[in-house]
Amino acid sequence: MIDFSLTQEQLLLQKTARDFAESEIKPIAKIIDESNDPNIIPWDFCQGVFRKGADLGFTSLLLPQEYGGMGGKCIDLVLVQEELGVADVSIACSYFNLTASMSLFLTRAGTEEQRKRMLSSVSSSEPHLFSVAESEPNVASSDLFCPAPDPQIGMKTFACSDGDRYVLNGNKSGLITNAGIADAYFIMARTSLDKPMRESMSMFYVPADTPGLKFGKRTQMIGWKPSHHTEIYLDNVRVSAENLIGQEGQAGALLMLLPEVSIGLAASHVGLARAAYEYALNYAKQRVSWGRPIIEHQAVALKLAEMMVNTQAARLMVWDAAIAADTDPQLAATVKAPAAKTFAVDVAIKNAQTAVEILGGSGITKEYQTGKFLNDAWIGYSCDFTREILRLNLVNFI
Ligand SMILES: Cc1cc2nc3c(=O)[nH]c(=O)nc-3n(C[C@H](O)[C@H](O)[C@H](O)COP(=O)(O)OP(=O)(O)OC[C@H]3O[C@@H](n4cnc5c(N)ncnc54)[C@H](O)[C@@H]3O)c2cc1C
Image 1 (cartoon, protein in one colour):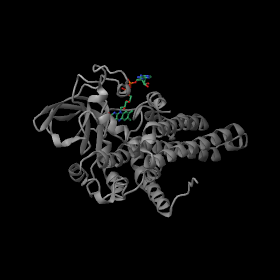
Image 2 (cartoon, rainbow, N blue to C red):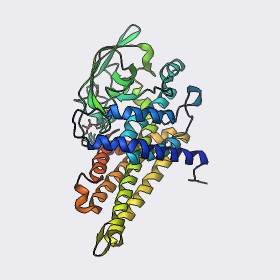
Image 3 (cartoon, helix red, strand yellow):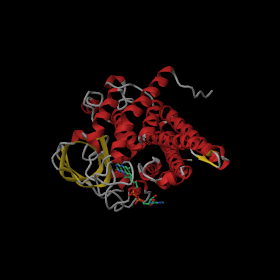
Image 4 (tube, rainbow, N blue to C red):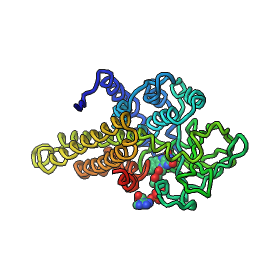
């Protein structure tokens, strides 16, 4: 039997996340969104929020209790991420989802020594912010999924083995989430340029203060204003061989077994879809035309019903993927997580667009939030790979 009811603990977790999102995330996101200062550093505002959220366990949700975590399941992550996504999808995804998921990654892929060394700070009072760097400026990120065995295709950053160390050289794209502000980086580099990218990508844990690790200027994006993205330059970055996660050439395979990143992203976009729906619903109850609230016009009512139905459909896909992450991680990673992520982002985009329509002329003004919803939702399209690439890859497994 399938039971979608939540336990008392899950309901409490959901409420805690909802209250936190409303009281802590929303006001900070508003300040950053409304700022016209191109030099604003969102992390200066978000750092305190991240720490408070970490204190509530949102970054260590998936971490087993033996490492100081909450020992939660993927469904717990999903409940939290939806609530955070209602307040601001970029804070939800960049700061909380990435750190919570990469902590889990270390417990799955790291050695016992690495787990102890790298995870000690996740649940501490000064929590670690993580960043994952794969994309490169002049290389299509979609190449990660290229089936052709041509070594020329894809990533160029190279990690040269040098005794008990690796020396990393190369550049990562301006879209690396948390680059320049993170405490530690999971950097992907080729350990052979003669083998296809898929077989030669390796993952290195690089602390932020490692010499040779440099960052560019913060990338300006159309949305996700509270987040921080920039280029990474690796100039003879020396890391101990003990910081290689897994074996050489395993990075792609290891990350494919971390469906939680996409599922958390998807849940945050369900939150965004819900925010756009609730915003439009509220407006439609207030705005009067032809002598009655516009919600009483069927053309508007139908749009609202469709927004609600699509949000619920996306939520069910995300919950389904979350359950699979704990019971059948392979199925979750190859099919259910990418299906849920692409669907949830599409619903967020559609709901944001419909919200603009329901608000009429007000929808395109900065006074209302509909423009933010739309710009934020579009960013989800290419974050964590594009809809087309994820679906093309998914077809290989159905
Ligand atoms: C908000 C955000 C955060 C991000 N964070 C990170 C991060 O933390 N770390 C990181 O490494 N990267 C990050 N990225 C980069 C992201 O993974 C890439 O932008 C994404 O995978 C798309 O790659 P690309 O920009 O190189 O587009 P391309 O790969 O150049 O694709 C361009 C277009 O062509 C299409 N396309 C390409 N190849 C094919 C094909 N074979 N068949 C059909 N269509 C194809 C794509 O669907 C897309 O529409 C982030 C991106 C965003 C937007």
